[in-house]
Image 1 (cartoon, helix red, strand yellow):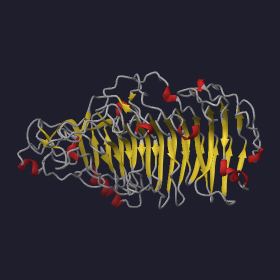
Image 2 (cartoon, rainbow, N blue to C red):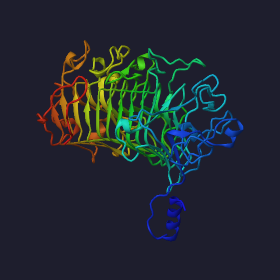
Image 3 (tube, helix red, strand yellow):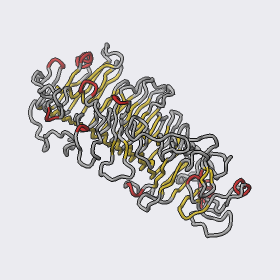
Image 4 (tube, one colour):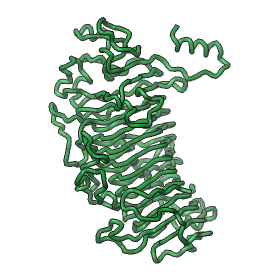
Length: 558
């Protein structure tokens, strides 16, 4: 009796006991495996060496042997021309892909010859007929609450380092490499998604060759989502070097991303606007993330320690948000949490959730380091906004600089520095919600460090703000801070509230115990007009109180 069958029997017999989660069949891919056995392959005169159900090499002879597949694409196709482009197995199965970056293994996704779809070396077709731009990984089969579908890299049990991950490289214009639209209860672990080209589809100098028959070895997007994708997770997943956006589309309920790295994609890092008029719903939790250098193409092959080049911004047709959403009201609401992460060096905004609106939607950013983004470092609002325990440097001129480790002239085409009126952080207040801005440390040379605005209305007593225990350290808005001929010469303005001032006067709001050091000359501390209480108007005595024109100081929120 197989092990999984024994476990099912034990769970049935001992129904009152708590059993471990069950998984169905396990399918294996490894470099020393063999071709996939199907009747279609045999009829087409192709070899069918392995059943894919065993973690073993192909023994060297025979058909339908107990061994692993030797190509990841055999998990969703058999290499025949009219193949059924769907995953082998059923929901609740596990797919273990062996080989890692550290061992020199990378698995290709997409057609190796765009004109015919035929890999002349192996005789396999790798996609659906009529698709000249490469067929990516189709939507995995949904699992269940008790039995998730799992797509696993070899070292999934311990996979925080880049070398431990199993790499999938998209090719020949594939979009996306992995499609997660509409699937549920699917876990993806220990996977690196990239392409083998330095081209970009935004407006880069190294634009992609899209002529049929001579396509560059690039991918248009890494992972796609829809708001019907629910109960899914990404763990130890890296998406980098894509010619478009690293991820595209919104998510559905109970979506969890942990140790997620979205870095160096030529368009956005995660563009949650798929362009179909939808936005996210339910809960999204992202923790231990790095969303950086998006809007720049990644070198291939990599020769620099910061291999990001041909950066573009919105002035030349680029789009470099680290995270951005559609301007569509969620129904039901979308409640997103970004916790313990980095948002840096994106050519537009760092995390932009200003348009995350509707039906109780919320965006919380906590324990996050944000710096060096060309626009605003963090933008939250629309629905209920929370910024808590973050360290933020408003050095929006960072990408003007020759940052050590970057390729020469990486920033040649960048011009829209400090867009959005040179405001470092934007948060909004609304009737019926309490905006929270607590325990943040802000180093600012921007014209305005924090702007509090109104998304829809702040006209009732239910429009509230809690702003407590923040530390503001101001610096001069001048050439030393990167403002060449355009600076005010004054210190940064800590807070601009405009029409949101009513929120500070409402009973239930709190502007309390904040430190303000080196503010703009016209700023008064305490800000009595905003009902500030228990203000601390002197040096907070943080060890590093210097300005960093790029990068950041070693600052830990207290």
